[in-house]
Length: 384
Image 1: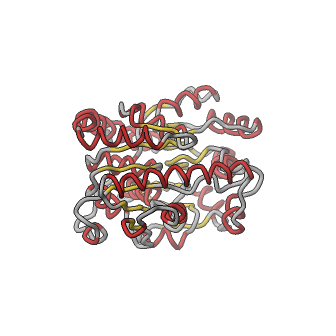
Image 2: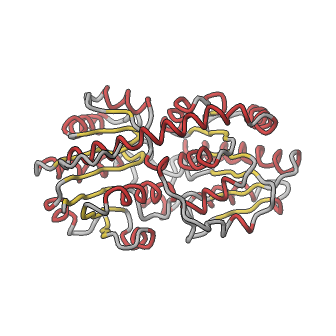
Image 3: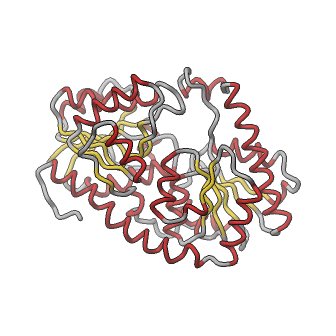
C-alpha cells in the first residue's frame, strides 16, 4: 500500500479546510496509507476518525515524510505572506524537506497570493518549480505560479466541489427562521506583518493600519446588517466558518446594530461542513468573505454577494462569471452592495444558470487533482 503525507490547515475548526481534507481522505484512503500533518492533531482526528494526524510541531513529522511515496501540500490558500511575513515559509518548510529527500511532491489545489517579500518569492519560486505537480483553484493563482517559474502548474478546481454531504445534517438549520440572510464574515486585519499570527491572536495585536481598516470594515458591515434587518425585515444569521475567530467579527457588528435581537450567531464547535451547507442552503442570500462559504452557496444554489479579501475570492468570482457581485472588502460601498443584493433577491435567475454550469465544470476539473496524484503514485485508476 502506497503512503501519502498530506500537509494542510486542518485542525482549527475551519469548515472549509475540513471539507478539503474530507475529500482527499475519501479519495485516497482505500488504496493508500495516509498521514496528515496539520495545525491541531486532536481536533483533526475528531473531524476525520481513523486518520493518522500529527501536529506541525510533532517530532515524528520527518519520519512520516521520509517513509512516504507522495507528499501533498494543500489544498487551500496556504502560500501567502499578507497575514504575516512568516506564513509562506511555514508552509514551504515541509515541502522543501520532502524535495530534499527526493520524494514525489504535489502542491495540490492551492490558491496563491502575490508575495510581498523578496525572500518569500524566491523560496516559493524554488519549491514550486521543483514540485512534480502543481494545481491551483483560480486563474489569478495560475498567473502567479507561472510568474514564479512553475510552468508545470495546471488550473483545476477546489476539492470541495466534490464534497459528499452527510445525511440528516439539518441540526442547525432547524433552529433558524424560515427566511433569513446568511453573512460569512471572517477575522481579517487582525495581524501584524512582523509578528506570528498565533501571537497576534493571543495578545490581540494589530498594526495601526490594520486597526483602522478593521474599524472601517465593522462600520460598513453594520450599515449592511441594519438595512437587511430594518428595511428588508429579515434576520441575519452570522455563520462562523472558522469557529471562535469569525464570531468575534460578527459580535463586534452586532454590538453596533440598531436591532440586535434580529441577529443570530452560529459558532458551534461541533458544526460540520454539511451542517454549514444546510444553513447556507436555507438562506435567501449569502453575503460574505469566506471562500468556502461561496462554494457551499454555489452547491446549494443560494445567490451570493462576494466580499473579496484576497485574490482567491476575486479569482473565483471571475471563474464563476459573477464579478458584478464581487466587491473589495477594503472599500466596498454598503449602498452598492445592497443594490446588487436586492437585484439578486428579485431576479435570482441572474446567477442560477451560470452558477449551475460553473459547478458542473468545477466538479469535473476537481477530479484532475486526484488523477494527477495517482499518476505520480504510478497507479492510474481513471480518477477523472
